[in-house]
Amino acid sequence: MPAGGHAAPAAPLAAGQTGKALRFSIAFFVFGLLNNALYVVILTAAVELLPAGVPTGVVALTNIAPALLAKAVWPYALRGQVRYARRIAACALLSAVGMLLVGHSPVLASRLTGIGIASFSSGLGELTFLQLSTRYGRRAGQAVGWFASGTGAAGLLGAAAWWLVRPLGVALGLSLLAALPLLMAACYLVLLPSREALEGDAAYRTLAESEPTPRASMASESDDDEELLRPRAQRRESMDVAPLPFGRGAGSARAVPFARKMLLLRPMLLVYIAPLVLVYLLEYTINQGIAPTLLYPLPSTSQHPLLGRIIRKLADYYVVYQTTYQAFVFLSRSSISMLRMPAIPRSWLWAPAVMQALLVALLASESLYAWFRPSIASPLVIVLVCVEGLAGGSAYVSVFYHIGTDPPSPAPKTASGALLDETDEEREERQGQEQEFRIGSVGLGDTLGILVAALISMPIEVSLCAAQVASGRTLCREVKS
Image 1 (cartoon, rainbow, N blue to C red):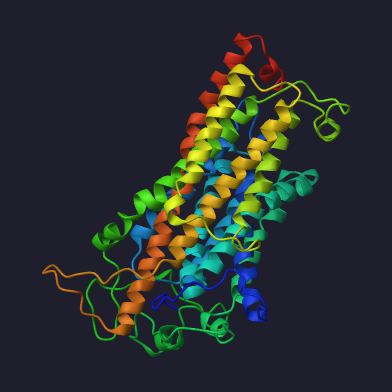
Image 2 (cartoon, rainbow, N blue to C red):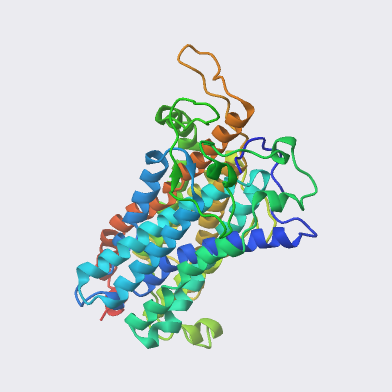
């Protein structure tokens, strides 16, 4: 229900958690896991989805630009209450259709179209589940923590899922994986408890949260009977949003006007959005532009017993870097949910971006000058990649945790400067819609950073490799030969 009347956020995972609270945590973990897994599948399978001579960067760009479009446009374009059941069903269906199109079309343009459809639905799905978390009041932080953990695990699951079905071929393999988003919709319908059912087991709830909150529109009896948060199949919302007027009629709530959204957005730009953009811009510049050039002579088992068994050819270095990165992203995105650690304080949210900037400088200089001692160079790079994953994942989960648990915003004022005249029910609904907008508008931060990184990483990789060759180090050319 609407997120009015926020008390202090609930602990990420309370001791003695009830069955419904456990289902709540699992549901948001599964949402993050399945919504983001197909993004990783497509990137992992990129080489096999493209004809010879087409750069894999084409897939990376097609896999991120539509998601950015969904996150950038949707929070501003739609007004009123989100109809979660309809939107989640649409996202699941679009993802499945996109994967089937990628798998069964032999034409490059059609495959890229399928990738774009799946990307758009993934971006809209991430936006939707983050917005859904705010409708659980003081449990919003717990929902965000478990959703972030699921998105971290998606990197590992997506890569593993593709390698598992890869022997079956692209068509059959992607057809099987197209079922994953349908499981996400089933999880919403079957597993996720309503806020009312969840708080029936809670040890404490505020008065505002104890009271039933009406829907934005009560124009018909059927609207009266529906609940905003009812992930059950008895009743399904008939459209993505309930259209609401800018004004107020009898028994109706206000939609958040565009001007009000701009006022809500402004204080978040430097506190939340800019740090997130910078973290992911730098992080993916390392992953896509610098890491492919961090190559060393193959390690011997006598010097490096573990690496000597894992790295058998030059291409294995990049695989090790990416696997390590994904593992530590999962660890850091699970810091609030599984490890029960606090979020990074709001005043320190720029710290991960500063750390990523230092890592970019350090790793780029190593790529150019090879100044790490040869005996420890590759293990040291792996350690730095661990730090990179920790910084990026902690920034993501901390930013969205803070937004999800922020207190409701002050009441807006009329043109004359007076406070808006609204009932308690309208205030709660307005605050709920504003929280949905706030967390949704920040969602484009990581995607925008990844997109810009995809555009600049290719020339960075080419330049670093050319500098290595000019200094007599040719491993970056040999790895592709």
